[in-house]
Image (cartoon, rainbow, N blue to C red):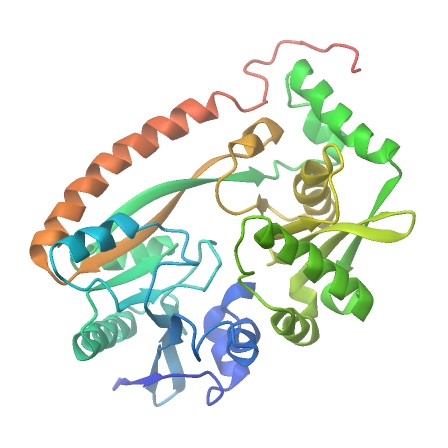
Length: 386
């Protein structure tokens, strides 16, 4: 079947329903999410994320797409290649622009080759060929596919892409009936510590609401955004998303949003901004008005686990970094990225670097996994919880 490929700088011309058929279950790949990034000015314009979507059509309509961006820095990617850029510059070459296939500011694994027919390698290859032709046209140093699916990785591995391994910490629902049921898997010491953290928050008089995007009042959304922005300002950085972006997705995809809102004496004091699919809760952004003991752990992790158990979700994905997640029941999970560099000398050098890096990541995952709170045997180690 003949496939025609084109490049777009906006999703406005693409029917949302047709795009969402390709996007599947991921909230981050939905037309509403990506279009809200454009509408709000989080991408495009004067930003360093310039949309360059690749779409493929055949006689049946939209057959595939790549969420592709021209990048002029490496901010907001969560796969760090600053040292590669520095090596290019020291060699007297330009690393930027580069091409990145990813969801901006969102380190969540998912499909990057969005295909109407799940493993249509012909359409996928047409999309990849168009991305490489774009790299040639704009003089991009490289093409990077971030947080891809297993299918994507297999495809790219056969097309001279290098694979980079990293890890995040995720929680898996092993059919738990309640949070207390989940805690029965912990060693007694870790179980006691977790209960103490939850009790401190409750004894402070803090209560929680789980709200969909359209269930917050405008005043609540203003507070949530202020908490979120404060986390960035504290690090002397600008927030990745703006208030207009959150307003847009709250209106257009409210069921894909979960806001964990903490209140004290009825006033909002903290929030976690989460997204959900049919299987996974993605805890993505957090902020608070002031410091309360264990409030971050409760808002971002324990409330999320509670929600997953109640809703029957399989997994809680709280994003990047954070070894403190391990002792709260989140275990190392591999994440991946795939890279092609035009300069073959650099490509080979980066390949050697990534091979060494994989060994380090494997060793790290094994070591950090030893600190998970789960009991190592079936023996009864129960102790009266404090």
